[in-house]
Image (cartoon, rainbow, N blue to C red):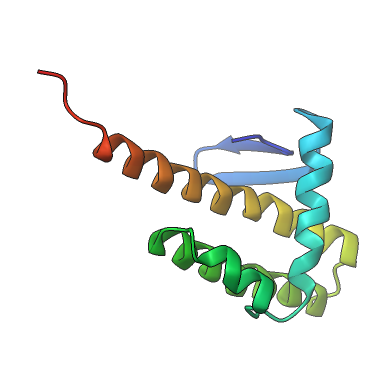
Length: 118
């Protein structure tokens, strides 16, 4: 998973810093652009419903949980007075965690479906 923010941790103290320019710039831009969608209320429209047909139930559940959590996170941050850009960056960082979880779920399912060599 890409790390886009700095952090200094020592014992019980954790200090998180601003977003860094570490990692893939294209990926960073795509994640932040995707995070802007979470300012809107979660819903499943016709297009999204058609995409769900080919997906495993576990992936749909993770995605739905992500929609609710990230929308709530965006609203919480903006309600505390954070700028929209700052809130979207924070949501983008958390979005990476959900993307990782979906990748792990798909990978685990694929590994379990592979026949064991004799």
